[in-house]
Image 1 (cartoon, helix red, strand yellow):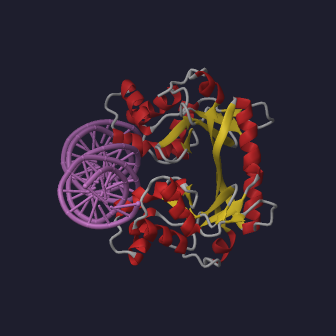
Image 2 (cartoon, helix red, strand yellow):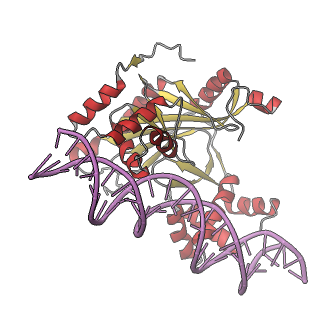
Image 3 (cartoon, chains in turn red, yellow, orange, green):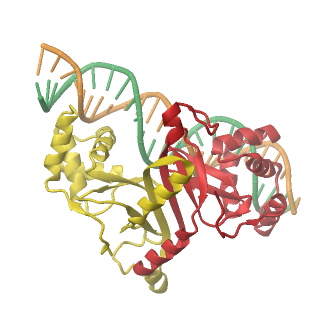
Length: 164
Length: 164
DNA sequence: GTGCTTGCAAAGACTTTGCAAACTT
DNA sequence: AAGTTTGCAAAGTCTTTGCAAGCAC
């Protein structure tokens, strides 16, 4: 799926990077923050704040919901996780294992799974449109909601994501 | 800004169209629903549910917040208004005066104004990506958050949108 | 008259915040 | 020791919902 020439620099040691980020910002390295970080990087795909709380508590049962909500902005600011807002529902988050460039999302209307897809032209688009408006792009997002052809034909989610 | 070949069919009589839509769905034509519709079409640009409540009450002071929230899905389903979800904050809505095709949004990071921009290639993009995933596109959105060059240079919003 | 709609107020869902205790540096 | 950070619970924001009265058809 990702066979473009898009640069995709692997982040070597994300946990250390996170500690260094906190140190550089004068933030303290607490067990709760590390548990939340670890939980985020253990996750396979996208997760919500609530998912993250559940997983972080398995690593450190003192983690509270408040701390998760207070940590998410730190994690996103560090670039180690990305926020993915698909609207309507909650916000989703995603470990940024590769320092990815421009990604679009395809949201399955049948199983709600979120697919991440490279979309390098988003950068060009942002610059082009903003140039006309005398503005400077800061971020962009592109999302497609789509029905799953095999699911609708067979009634089964052949990709292994549950049907709800 | 909108000089593409995009088809842009003007809706002749939106108010009648709305009444017909309700009749066809077996929904009753109430004063409240009409006031909400009228308020939506009086609005210049984007508005929130709360904005709509305020304006609709000027036309019919019996309109309640609950009815606004209950009417918004009807209005969007009829195609007479569009929902624009820029994430984070509330949802915004917009009278669909022209039956517009594919539009992207540019959100000003300085004054929060939402610019609507034609982006016909979104359709192509949705089809292309979904084809690879064996899916069928239902809707798509493209949004760019951008800083305002003149505002940052002069400290004044030269477009006339307030500074916050 | 029938039953969809309404306003009200309460409930929900998700997130933020005040405060004293606990912890990092 | 100094000052952040934490958990808890309460508060906040936006939206939805139960119910009896009211209105469109």
